[in-house]
Image (tube, rainbow, N blue to C red):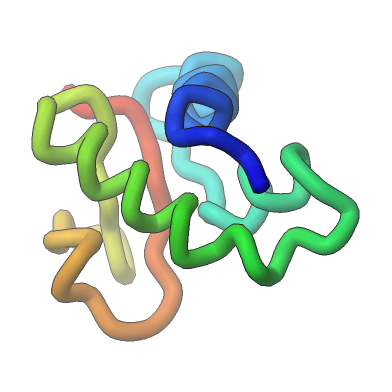
Length: 81
């Protein structure tokens, strides 16, 4: 299993590579971490929520900011403004 710091590093790397105003799916981070990526989705979303709480990432649904913990369904992640 990947550590929270591994997940955080991948999330922030993807966000910085995309740049301001661009988003990515959390599954992209999970896929970058393991071939069997589906079990990592919960830890990836949990780490995304922690980074969002710190103001480093923003989670969106249909282009609108959402709480990544409370959000149901697919979310997108990007650099916080």
